[in-house]
Amino acid sequence: EAGVAQSPRYKIIEKRQSVAFWCNPISGHATLYWYQQILGQGPKLLIQFQNNGVVDDSQLPKDRFSAERLKGVDSTLKIQPAKLEDSAVYLCASSLGAGPYEQYFGPGTRLTVT
Amino acid sequence: QKEVEQNSGPLSVPEGAIASLNCTYSDRVSQSFFWYRQYSGKSPELIMSIYSNGDKEDGRFTAQLNKASQYVSLLIRDSQPSDSATYLCAVNVIGGGADGLTFGKGTHLIIQP
View: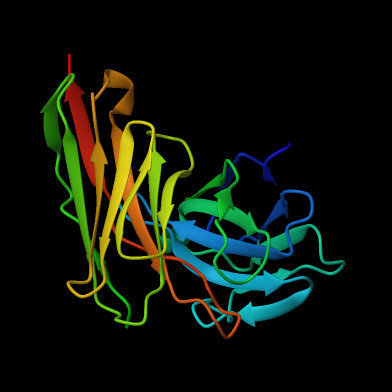
């Protein structure tokens, strides 16, 4: 079974530029999560989708971050404009559904903002 | 505000010994508990999940949960150098749809050959 796919794996941009990350979850997984992991910290939830609807975006900085999952499968996370403090690894995870299910992570996208 | 606390380490354990990793959480309604292993430069890999009080064993790994004390632990028996990594404790609340994980900062484990 293929795991969670993410691209790109690495991205370097200058502050105030925009960037987008893509995620394709494990086949059949209805729930998709985006997490931000800053060096030395545990991952922090940004947004949760159930199929193509947003379940939780309470920790998403909505002035600069946006995310969508239009067809209930793959998802895109965008940052515009980027700030230095956005330098982090952006992790996508998926699970069978909302509830007592395990979440599996993709390889992540390492973003460096200069 | 949900919080998950872990000792950041490093925790150094001789090869072949038992490594004991601990985690406490603040939210009494937390219902699902997970241990992830993260190698440097890699993404978190699920090791164990536990949902009810008591012990759960899987190979060399045992997860222990005590909801009354708001405490969850991971034991690694017969520790190997390949177990050297950061171990992340994560908890969530299920029901209502929103079940994103709250993570601790992780414990850096070093297995000494």
